[in-house]
Image (cartoon, rainbow, N blue to C red; front, side):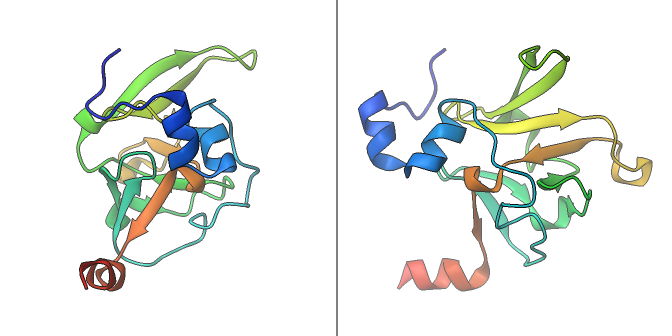
Length: 140
């Protein structure tokens, strides 16, 4: 599949640190409760670490007590691809960044109904949080 942001494997390895490469490009998963955004409540926009695309807003982040960052919806459904995954002896829906194809995590239909019922379960290592502070410091 052709993506808006494409890199060779060598370029991906240079762009990402090894743990991020393993998760984003080799479909790995970080250990539960190890991600820096699991319990983070700072306001901002969560961007794809692979291509800087804004994917999730903090207004849709919630504590799912699952060990990974959880969101009730992306900023734009068109930015998230969904794939059937049967790799662990179960049927799951994998989610990827539609701009660069990076593996983000999984989609489950087990969130509270008042949040829409969907839980985008995302590896923190696949995200970067852009807050008003980080945006102003990178603009200087």
